[in-house]
Amino acid sequence: MKYVTLEDETWFGIYIDHSSSNMIKNSLISNAIDGDGVYLFESTGNKLDSIIVKNNYDGVHSAGSNDNELYNITAISNRDGIFLDNSHGNTILNFIIDDNSIIGIEIIDDSSINLIYNNYLRNSVNALIQTSGIN
Image (tube, rainbow, N blue to C red):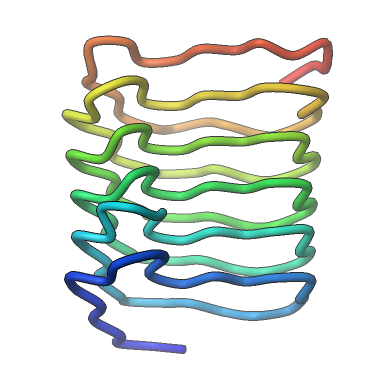
């Protein structure tokens, strides 16, 4: 999917469930107040590039999802900018994570071996890592 604009969704902006090899690029997802901008659930090998997620519950939420590539994403004014839950081997590169109300990047459960680099963070709490894995 390219050039998608989703605004004022009541639940999730984009929900990828048990799926692989999807690409989302050059998109805006905003105001999914009761849900996440992008939610990856037990999905592998997806690519997200050049996306703006703002005013959602979580900007990008990965639950049990592995080996996904997330590049050039702007996460502004969400609850959490990025939330990784039991997710492994994901790449998070060139993000702008700004003005999220709780945490910029939250990593929990057994999330491990995620590559997180070259990101700009400006939140009251930039990162919270509660996992036994190495990130």
